[in-house]
Image 1 (spheres, rainbow over the protein chains, first blue to last red):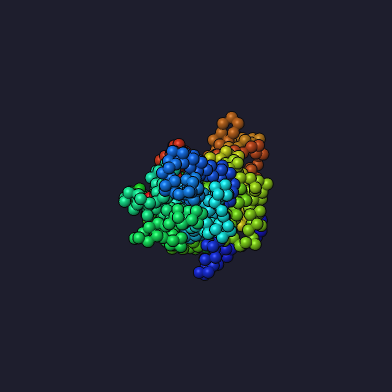
Image 2: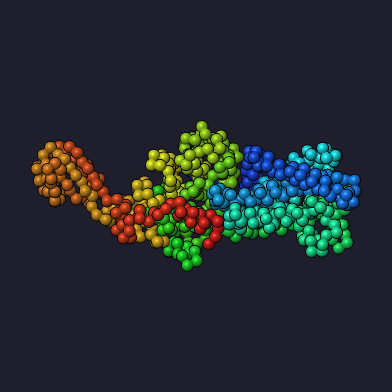
Length: 285
Length: 326
């Protein structure tokens, strides 16, 4: 044992604003790092979260092509349905991984680790930000792994394109992780999480345009798809991967949104969710 | 100087008053115990003192900082070992401590050294790279104690630190805690409902239904309920009994082989009687009132009757504050 001074002298200076900021930066880093560490260690999660998108791609893609062949050709031109589905499946991996990461807060609460975090001299904002960045990093990696399939599906990639895609994936993931944290801050149990999955996350996925073009839909559905944040991730990803013919942009007031506009909408949604999540976290005693 | 200062502290959950206007002080480097049955308000008090809950009324200072208005300063100054495990099962022992070192702003150049130091104290250095999931209950608790002191807190809170551990491990855990306390002069605030553990404390507050019903050293508390009984066996009981009667004005009771004495402070009395008696003392036995007796006298109930099913209680407890609902 050393004889180092115990007490406020050790680690608690008269906290200037700057020192507090630096301390919180360390906190953001370690919360992020824990998320990434756990992801790296959890092979089962890695495999299962890749298996599901592949299942969708192969079964849905092949099945629908076989039964709806002619209709699909009319809608998609010479692009096969599997290729059309590909960006949607990437978005799906990002969506599920992001939400799952955020919801792990409920586990942390159940197994006690959350107390270690909540009683630390760390602002709630730092905890939420670290968690959101961690979840986004993990989700982006999951999406990126799926890009390996691109050459098989005849989609060509170049470094700049990949960089843009990674940015979009990260932004989408960040928005969705923040939303997940907001939900998790209020969630009572894992049973409640099942409800959220069924009534929020699945609809968000189905209505995002991952499965079908968001054109010629019934008016009510059209409105909902425009409220779905995932749609603003799927559309630009598809445009980058398959070209503007297939993804002319979500139409709002007769204007087709471009990639930058999509990104701005995602960023705004992310900022709102982040603010609400911090608030929800601070409100819990 | 006081490490903890509590004045008229009250905490209500709706209609339930969990802590009812309690006041006490804990001095620097004191080992202070909160003793009481489950549901008496022990954990609620800890939660308020470590800023996890806000007081309904009254005030409390820990390490000189107000628990309501200077929460970050309080948090930096305290270490906590919770009743239920609060480790990340998927990380290694070392990674858990690394996490802690970061969130408690342990300077980067000291982190590795301090982690090694605390892991060696609790004899887990060899297991540093093992994932915590593989640890036994006792090992987890030791790791949590190591974590609790990693950032050099002034006050260490231990909420039922040995709940659910076997007697041998409990003893072990206590050795670490007291060694740390001596080495670093940390103030220790602990709750327990094990009477024998309360004996490790310098002072004990007995809490029942949210109120402190007594606060003193374990010896003084026990003196409240009655006297110690000293049993002697000597070479010559006849002469010993006479001498004791004359010298100390006590009334020895004899049976065939022993002399039984009721005295105020048995532990202090024994060395005197052994050295002062004219006959050789062969054996001495001291029976002292237990804290169980104290609790029974103060509340009219035995503390053990209240225990109930610990797992059911822990679930309730988890709901009360683990989920953040009032």
